[in-house]
Image (tube, rainbow, N blue to C red; front, side):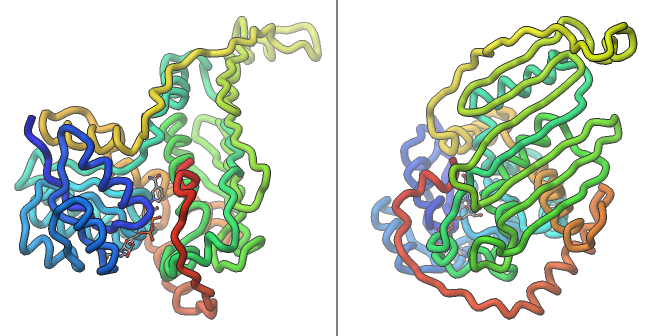
Length: 389
Ligand SMILES: NC(=O)c1ccc[n+]([C@@H]2O[C@H](COP(=O)([O-])OP(=O)(O)OC[C@H]3O[C@@H](n4cnc5c(N)ncnc54)[C@H](O)[C@@H]3O)[C@@H](O)[C@H]2O)c1
């Protein structure tokens, strides 16, 4: 089998796992490792017997891989992706695709431009949770119309607990300049992506974001987002890195019933008939629609989702397999996160499409006015699994 030769850029917590997966998969192999931190680049290059580079541009001048996998901090995702597109290389980027929508738009435009010369160019994002059996089941229940017209989607996702020690590790984390955001940009992109994958994008967003409420950081660590849809559905996203124990509970309510996902259990409260019909025709003032409680079975692969996304990326290049997560779709979760923050800063709801320039300008202002001094304590993170689940 032909193997896609991938140059890995950024070999920190995530990148080091991706290096292992790239070497383990049948349809990929490492072409090189690049990190601005020479010690890390050298260490992993030696482990995998590939050349080390310390600057991605120099690397791309010296070698010709088929693709790059970008696992650097978020701000660097768009410029590196654009350098790769300019050379006709396929790109798999870590999430979020960018820090703000304006940068993501530029990145996606560069991709479409490169596709004029390279029509089969592939651009994917590491949203590995899209491979999980329970999320796929929820999506199919909605798409099959099991819930009918949707009225409310609420996700309480507060089990992203992080300590001060986590934030102090790595100079880039949790600053406007280094990371560009907090829980919405680092921990929650998977949930926000799934949220919009299930129920689409709202028309109006209202956000309440507390900045450094529980941690010594200058970005958000406790957030509530309220989403209003053209068809009347409302959505809520409640997240925090300061709840212990935290909650991960998703409720999607429709006219024909309600889905609840919590602690691995997927429950469908199935109405016998439409709730709208009951509202209109029932002679009782209070009686809800008769419903049945069903524990919905689903199959979960139990494999690391990251590896499946890399394998899918390579198959998309090799034989046109449909992508699990096309990177253009990454702009939706970014839009929701940026919109929550912009609304919170402005103290009013914001309409979509988002005023991307206004949010980019706000970020620049936050960076320029920052007086935050970070207490950086570099240490090896041992419990990396908690970084994505
Ligand atoms: N998909 C997931 O489940 C998941 C989980 C965690 C992190 N992430 C994402 O992965 C990315 C990296 O996060 P991390 O926790 O691995 O960070 P990290 O700090 O552990 O690693 C980042 C690495 O990138 C290197 N780097 C920085 N700028 C670079 C550049 N311009 N060129 C080359 N190397 C550069 C750093 O030296 C560092 O080694 C982030 O965007 C994050 O959101 C994804």
